[in-house]
Length: 292
Image (cartoon, rainbow, N blue to C red; front, side, top):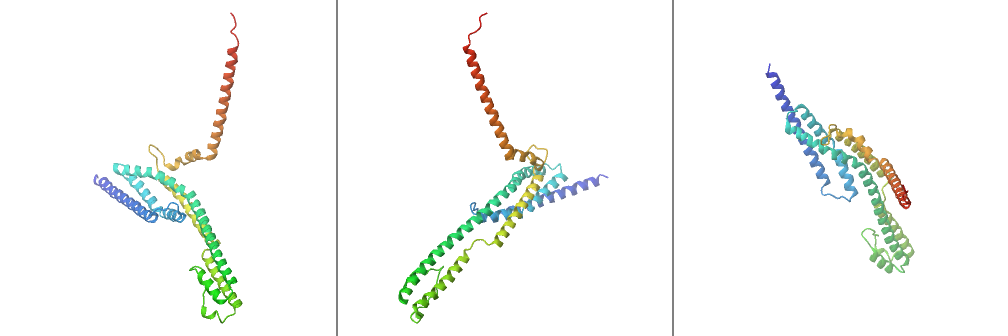
């Protein structure tokens, strides 16, 4: 009769060890994946911010599953003190992890806005620079007085990013006005090709980036809830998710603003009252005492 409980206890211990080992493996896999994607850090680069947050969110089911398995292992083996301490430590660690996933939402929005801003700024700068160089070449073509002068002017203005195909042997055989028209047409084509390389973000790409960012934000909120359900602060009898309403109430800007206003009003009233009381005491001191 006693062998059955012993076997059951042994099986429970084996299952517990397996769950704990799998949880540790999942944590290691997630850490390696995230570190490989965020190193070296480029904190001011919006593309790095978008990539790192996307990898962190897309791989988040791995540590969440590991934390769930660790909770299950601790539940199956309540007498295993090292396992219980490990679960408590990781449950406390899950509190800032949950808040970090919430922080991803505004960071992702700022990174997307910053990437749009930088892309448009670079595109505008490149296109303005291309237009300036093209105008110099266009002016040189229009001001040339002979094929030889035209050839000399163009060779001095050639650039790798704005190059016109020149055939000096054909210059004498083509009338100068026709040659100028031909070169101006080539210049317009070259200018258009260079500007197309540095065009602003097209609507299709912008829509794709926006949809991807919204997906990352929604997933980050979901994982924040999941980690909060598995998290628990020190000396707290309930999961961190249960404490969220009170925490959000403390962080509510409207409530803080109202409290600040009420506090300033009460302080003003107190100052007024104290000033009035001091004034009354001053006038009372001027009145001579009554004779008995």
